Amino acid sequence: SNRPSRGFDIWPIPSHWVSAEHEGGFRKGWRITHPGSSEDVPVSDEEMAYFYYPDPMDPFNSRGPMDAARPAAETSEMIRAAQRATFDNLAAPTVVFHTGLVPGEDGTQQKPELTKEQREQLEFSLKQAYRGSGKWGRILITDRIIDKVEYLSSRPVEMDFPESGKMTKEEIMQIFGVNPIVAGQIENANRASATVAIEGFLDNVVNPLLTLMSQVINQWVMPAIGADDKNVVAWIEEARAMDPDGRRSDLELLAKWGG
Image 1: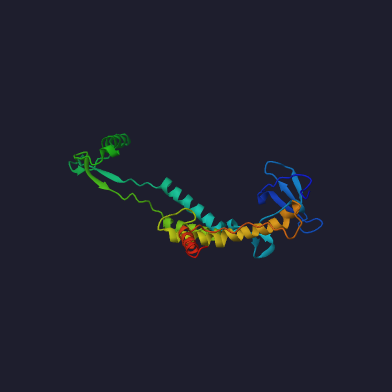
Image 2 (image 1 turned 45 degrees about the vertical axis):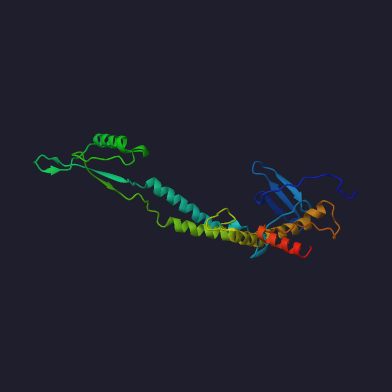
């Protein structure tokens, strides 16, 4: 009997679809604009529950982590674009073949000046004879055509891109409160460090979000479903890290004292 007379759905709407209206009071209404539609959908303040990060500089405004991380994210994109341009524009052969000397018009030994067709034919013959893992270790015999083989460095010039990328990655992760272990990196990680990393992530990121969400649910969602009793509270339970070793110690202690 205490349920609302009509049913309704709860829809999660992206924030950039929604704009506030202040006619008749602060945030007395809202309008939802779907990207594929030219018409706005009006929504009353009693039917809108908005979840947001408050802006420290403006209590009536919001600011998400991505807004704070935008400079670092743009820098990361520029580093990727510069790396791509480096590989696209870099000419970095790994091996150089020296041609042998041939008699010149004056009788002296000189390097031959190969035509474009001769260079392509020579390159094709060398690739056919030596390219591929199946021909690894094959002996190369030098003669008048190929006098010497020399290795060149194949390392691209990256202008310290790896270290710059590492710095921007760490900055973005710190802004979002995420650490490498939580993101799935298991290098140099063990059970103890993983537990501490997850605990810090839950305490500093997840649980504050759950608290904000719980407050919004009690402020706007509960009255919308007819739960006007102030003694009825909806609250999302605090997230806790699963520590098998710690749980085993707790159970052993309880069993020891008959708990």
